Image (cartoon, rainbow, N blue to C red; front, side, top):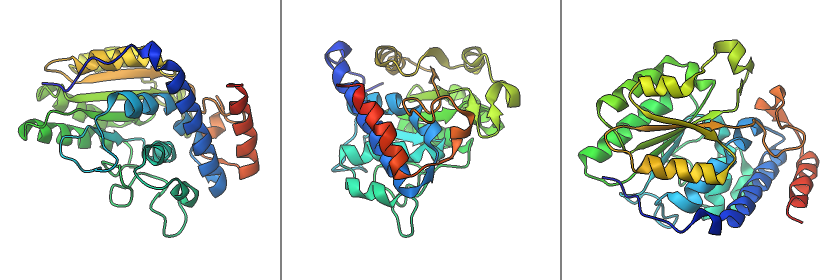
Length: 284
């Protein structure tokens, strides 16, 4: 069983979601810019999916972050943690001024997600490939405990080079874990170059279908496509779902968008504010 309920038409929320995504981008730019270095590329490519999950689809309560029947999210590409921190701060899991402590001494916001440090983080991640296995365990546990909730997962396309991802994929299909809704951030770049040159992962839809999953590829920055794909995945029975997000690494950041060097970039707060000004101009 799923906790899917019909929602009002996405068109009524589009302006809100677009503006919220812009806010999240600006918060993340300031967050990383204050530190002076960070994984801006892979953070910006998942802004839209995090926005639509936390502001439209997920059953969560910031005032009770450990509530038993909450939807869970595992950001397996844990280096993109800064953008998830922006969402969690905006939702009220912790004060927004924590964002300015990113990866500094004594912080509750390390560069990679840590469930023991940060309210709202459901699983510690950063060792690529392991998040999918964690999600299988979490989803299976919820099934056994008869908890009606979804476990959401975000992995990278470069991360999909890891064999552990595919071992976990087989397990999820074997146990018919229809409470898993996963996303691949297909931004086509990884730390050492273009994904197609390092270890080509296409055709990802065919691969996940072959492992027994419902799979679909969509435009990952389009809220209409995201909403439809998530709603369809929430209705799936007896198999997990994988939504392949066709994205642009560094999306929306004028100095980083589409550049290979954006995986982990050095930039200061002045540079961040230049990019923020460009984003502000989109809504004038």
